[in-house]
Image (cartoon, rainbow, N blue to C red; front, side, top):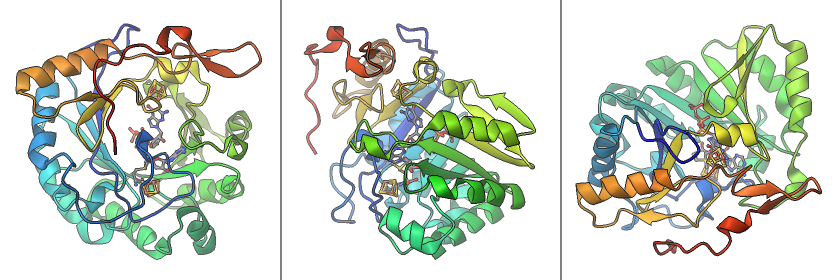
Length: 328
Ligand SMILES: Nc1nc2c(ncn2[C@@H]2O[C@H](COP(=O)(O)OP(=O)(O)OP(=O)(O)O)[C@@H](O)[C@H]2O)c(=O)[nH]1
Ligand SMILES: C[S@@+](CC[C@H](N)C(=O)[O-])C[C@H]1O[C@@H](n2cnc3c(N)ncnc32)[C@H](O)[C@@H]1O
Ligand code: SF4
Ligand code: SF4
């Protein structure tokens, strides 16, 4: 197992398979890579299935035991089933998707070896859903979640981004997962770092307090020190990275962009390392280097400025980049 300079072991990788998407959610950070809009056709610069599988084989050798496929919308990749099938057996394979393509493909993904799925669902109302995702596919998403549960992927986690526009829907979403078997809820604090709009932020502590008041049981997950609240039999997990040093101190995943760049932190694009035309040995050393250079974002890369805000630690300003930054 590789460990970074802050004692954080890297146990998982998060692979973005494309930056394309059939939605245009108003809050989207696209895993740190910019706009998702544009042509839906597959693009040449996306990592091939062979490249993805080769990378996974290599990091399996470093003890990485979990992979998350994400995007953009990873289900726009026609070869997703092939990638899942060829993922090393020792790894837990999970997927984060907007759910629209699950009705036809949930069974095939399970057959290929998918273990878990998270589906983005920000509201239980078609109109509200349209506002947030700029898409009329609400019915497809509901069908997709159902297909995933029926295919044996339960519990399916519903990902809901918590910001001004969605905060009013939290109580009904909590009741929804409590009342429906096979569903869990993940409330993701809106992250303004890559998309601006700090005014959309909600008071996440107030949400913790509200859930704590209703919960029969509260647990802490090792990853990110995330809290899980059990309310009337339903599980609600909070993902609250913004300004949270504990969250970053417990971050165990390296990311890979759709173009095959290694990336140590979601919020940074100044530490990208290309795996381009590399040999297996070169990829292994680049992975080691990415891990060695990982830095907790909050608390180290960003430090408190004394006024309740965060500022870049001078140590990292104009630090020489050893590789060119991907242009997309
Ligand atoms: N800043 C930051 N945000 C994260 C991180 N991990 C997850 N998130 C946020 O949470 C969103 C949803 O995460 P998912 O891809 O569904 O998966 P997850 O919750 O990280 O993982 P599982 O609970 O194991 O399925 C991500 O797209 C990010 O917005 C992280 O390491 N750092
Ligand atoms: C970038 S999407 C990629 C996978 C897939 N397209 C989906 O929507 O599930 C991954 C997750 O990031 C979340 N997300 C996107 N932008 C965000 C932001 N600014 N703050 C918090 N979460 C965000 C989405 O809600 C989604 O659950
Ligand atoms: S579905 Fe996912 S990738 Fe697409 S715009 Fe929404 S959050 Fe972004
Ligand atoms: S260091 Fe913090 S912000 Fe960066 S990926 Fe890890 S948890 Fe997210």
